[in-house]
Image (cartoon, rainbow, N blue to C red; front, top):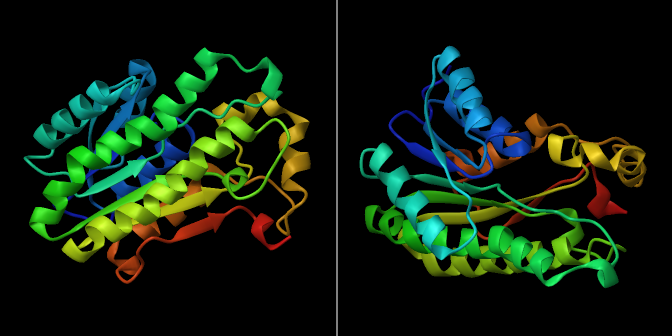
Length: 249
């Protein structure tokens, strides 16, 4: 374990599985006190146990992130657990439904926008001003490659994450002058619990990129860690593709 992030607190949403979990483990391994957030308390406890077994520090906070109130409560609880400060925010929680537009319900749209747009918006609103007051902080949003181009059946997910792309740039302009860096990572097809149901379609989607394979959560997490640390001290408002080169074709 390194001490690069010793003394910092990192809040990761969607941290009980997939990219979020890999990010929590990676930031904890660099010395951050990690607040693991998600809906499943069992998986949350397992993530915390894994971090602690490796010598790290972590706590779990259950959050549904269905509205502004739940986001603000998570921010408050994380600040309390962090000894009065959250230095790194990773908005990794996301819903990514696939399917025809005609089959999409109002409830589907509301759920996707709540988790993918509303929750990050109010988490940043709750945490970024304190980061700015301290003169430092890092926020990393997790978007998706389908926020950058049209793909049949992926419009709702892509549109919600496209909103997060714009918010990333807006927040960089708003908070960057006070020392808070806001950036995003745009993953391509990644093999996680959430994409397990895609089956062969995931491999087919990944085959279009130069890497020719789906990514692993740990590979995306390393890109997030880069943007969250001082290694990216001169990076503001960037959208870093971690998509196996899909952006190149």
